[in-house]
Image (cartoon, rainbow, N blue to C red):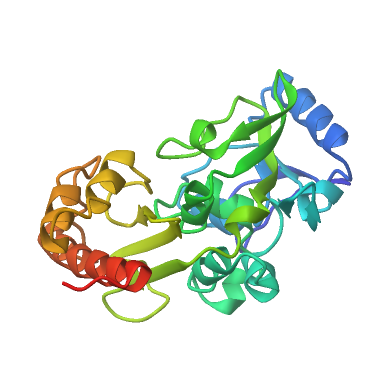
Amino acid sequence: MEKEEGGQNLIPFNFEYHKPSSISKAVKIYRKLYTEGKKPLFYNGGTEIITMSRINGIETKAVIDIKEIKECNEYVFRNNQLVLGSSLPLAKIEEMNDFPLLSKNCSRIADHTARVKITLGGNISGHIKYKEAVLPLLLTDSDLLVVGGEYGQRQVSIHEAFNRKINLMPGEFIAQILVSENYLKLPFVSKKETRIDRISYPLLTVSAIKIEDQIRIAISGLCDFPFRSTNFERELNRKELPIEERIMRAIKNIPAPILNDLHGSADYRQFVLYNTLEETILELKGEKK
């Protein structure tokens, strides 16, 4: 479907709107629009595109809505993996709860009205720095099915595709997220700490899983990007040391400056982080201080 939309009440400029029914059509439309110099964008949930357009943070003359593509809406177990389409709303993932850690994280992103519109792919690919839905994917070494661009289609590790943000080739978009069944029911902790209420932007979000006797940790809101650090995890798992020392050693391995903004100072965030990590270790390992 193709039409001109002004969106006078939402987006202050005109643009072409395309809604392809298949991956191949989406890729074909993108290539045509790109050669015409229209700087096309793939449109999933759309909440961020609308917000950024209102403040002139996005420049495009065409958007390609991928929400009608079958593969982008799949929710199925296949080949010992949970396959999650990138166009699935966060509210749907929260409701299904086959991946409890991801469901828990999704349940605290914005409010329910927004979660009905925000998609999994949109959350992990957007410009907003928190991207809480990516934390469980980093912990479970998930794969992404990426389509478009010069490769056509490729399956890539989340660790390769996500380095502070999603890094894709021009013309690519995420069609699906693939999570091994082995990770879905592991012991986990998900803690979102806010200054005011449960759905505010986080001071920080800590997600953790326990694999055998090791804890994996991923954090959002602490720095300008979500992260999972092997150095950070190594220090937290030093069982020969007291918990307090392990946490302080881990904090020294935070990969970037701690945020200092209206939501909380860097010192306050570090204070909250220390307490959250202590609670997480105790919950997952049953250790004593």
